Length: 231
Image 1 (spheres, rainbow, N blue to C red):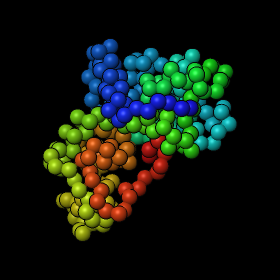
Image 2 (cartoon, helix red, strand yellow):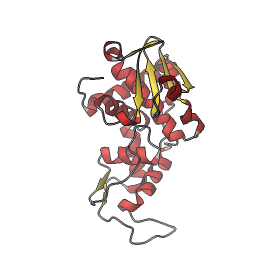
Image 3 (cartoon, rainbow, N blue to C red):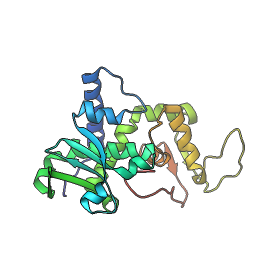
Image 4 (cartoon, one colour):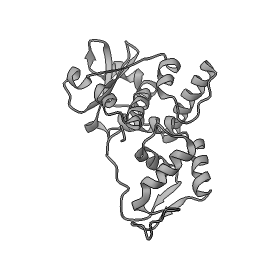
């Protein structure tokens, strides 16, 4: 499905709008860990559930689907079975992104199913613009810029963390060397400081780089699985 180009700021603003609307309607504060399931159900008024999407849609790599007519979001049962909270919550947030950003286009361009027009998300489509936009929305929703920067500052100070070395020069029980090899420790420290308990390490390190808080100056890529539901 083709969608209009959107800037990162526009997508971030859309995620902020959803949090504000949810807070206004429920009188509940929205702070990490962001209650993405409740935001979908109470904030957006959508049904949220699990089903065997891979069997239903006959696709081996489908993770989630958003149905417009039914006002529902369904996530593949496999994500509930593996009990990976970060992966699951990112998928929830990703589908919420489709609802907020793309539902007006789904009726126009998506295939028809028993429940009306829908969009489904596959691992093999992760790099398509429509999926990248939903990915970025999920990142902004689960990891708001203000809260991420506050957590980062608490742990590492106000200056960006620049990774000059690929591997650690030392390994001690008190501190660790900020290098490409130790990106999981960097992400874990920020997650703990900010209360981002329903966010994966991979999602956090991507967010830190996007905000310019971690700058990788090595030739080594900070590796993770290349799929929108990050583990």
